[in-house]
Image 1: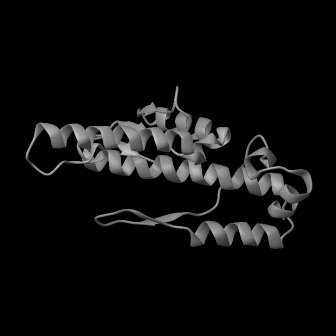
Image 2: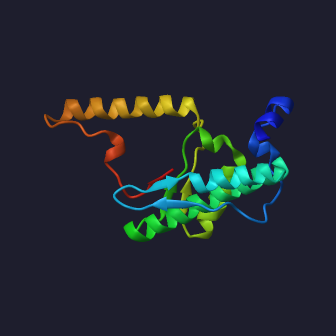
Length: 162
């Protein structure tokens, strides 16, 4: 239903979202060395709503609300476990202003310091710049040391990156 609306009207799901969602879909994650988000409960919820002919605006709002709550809750768990209070929101998904603004607000309400793109785009342009920065750091480290270079992204583990 959402895809048909996008195809017909040229809209993306965040543009379809109602102003607020009264509920969210169920979500789960697995813990361990790496946290793994399980998409099945969310997908099942969306499919059930489509089968019940729920309006695409409500499905979109619930989906976005679910992702915001899921990511904020997961950051809170990781933050408590590792003593982290900073979160970096990066990547093309954060061109979606509904997700960006909602997650920023949810994280700030959990007392996180949230960092987002200010001068560099969140999409491929930012990725290219990031790759150039890492390459420069690796090149610099290689020139300054005989040791094996460490990629810039591996030097600091004091923040959560989504």
